[in-house]
Image (cartoon, rainbow, N blue to C red; front, side):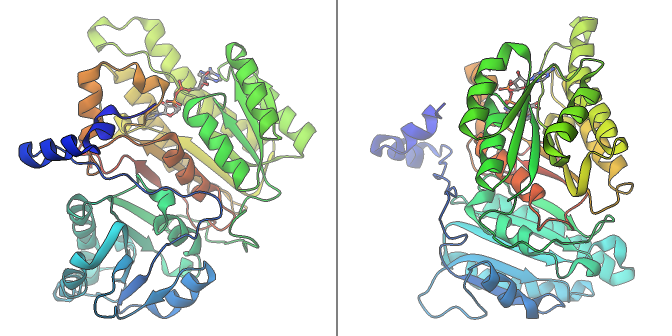
Length: 444
Ligand SMILES: NC(=O)c1ccc[n+]([C@@H]2O[C@H](COP(=O)([O-])OP(=O)(O)OC[C@H]3O[C@@H](n4cnc5c(N)ncnc54)[C@H](O)[C@@H]3O)[C@@H](O)[C@H]2O)c1
């Protein structure tokens, strides 16, 4: 499924019109494929805080080259700024001093990561200054251009040694369509980090359940988790059984055909995972449906089916898997929310309720989980799939362009974000909702 506007603007006549009419000019985003280095270029490190000293070693462990000073004429692929040393508002000037001279020296699709301390763990002037970082990164995300991304990562001191998996994701093309996000590491409970023996296969030996795996985003999640070493157990409805079976055979995985809203679905899934796989390490609640209508015209079945598939089923399945002890230690639970659950959308009261509920599921579980189990969610924006291909042209155009990247995302962008949450190295990444939306202009 291609983006015809983007195909057109990449032609010479398209470029001419873009220039003269001031039309959106989307950059072709770099995406990661197996065997690529994580960062194809140099990372410049700045700032003066408690994380900076260990950064070169952490990056080196990921095969990423870094420096504190960029040679004359050289360009940077990424900038990492340690802002944990900023303890009052006067200290925020360090952002201007570091970034301003480098902004014109960035390569295409650059990455910027600012590291801070969760403001809620600080008081007074330091808390104010740390909170201020959010305005900086969100604005820089909107002006960096050329396929660049900018994120703020709040690292709780207890998790200082657990940032490698997050840097690997946010500095690489894996995070192509993630920008303007605020991530918290170690801020909610779990801070254990399992050693990752092989960063190219961080899920080796793990079992991953993916619902709605036969097509669209779910298919891509299954492919990426398989690439990262997991045995994938795909779930989908009987109507999608043959596509599911074919895909899971290709991925050397396993499949389970059922409707996740069936009353015995949680027990059947738990039983299957225990009997055939001895448990599960990664649970991805991807299956979802839309039944759009304005509330005034919405029949009860449209309301009920959307809540049942998108929210009640993930809640009940998670509960059963946890209560039955089927989720292994250091397990990963991942929800799929939506930008609609954050910003709301006309005709989607049912869908937005269900997706805001998925965020509620993360918030309710994140303090409760033990044994190193984490819970996080992605909130996709406009992702080009069969679902969005059916959206009328004008609505689709607005949806695709109203973000800092002027384009829709791909299923793989959602899948890579989930793979970061799922990684064995992400034990301290807990309780986050990360938007995969190209920094859409809607919602915070
Ligand atoms: N495409 C987007 O732009 C977008 C944006 C935000 C969120 N999302 C979310 O991402 C997820 C995947 O979306 P997609 O675009 O790939 O949709 P899709 O319709 O292409 O795929 C959804 C899959 O879920 C399965 N499914 C539906 N009901 C089920 C049930 N009761 N039991 C088991 N399986 C069931 C379907 O058969 C299908 O294989 C959904 O949760 C969706 O809400 C998508």
